[in-house]
Image (cartoon, rainbow, N blue to C red; front, side, top):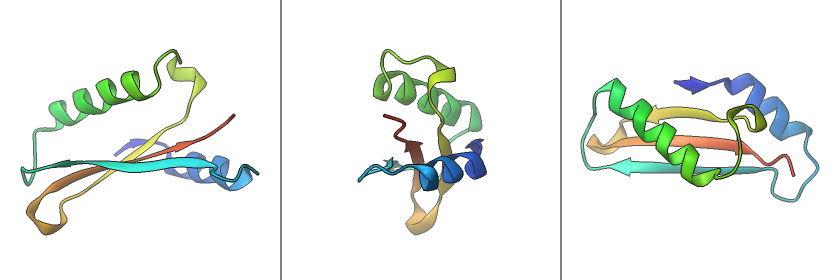
Length: 81
């Protein structure tokens, strides 16, 4: 959905940290929401979660799941330090 999954996975696999990534999801009661709102939510979450970093200082990967009649936006951030 957003980001480059292959790059995020390659970065994660190359790291030697105990916890090489942050993984989680944002859950919504709705089964789906319009695409433009998904991108706004992702943008605001990244600005909050990664406060102080510019977009070229991190790699993210987002994908969605609509299992169990609810929308979930999953994220993966390789931890580069």
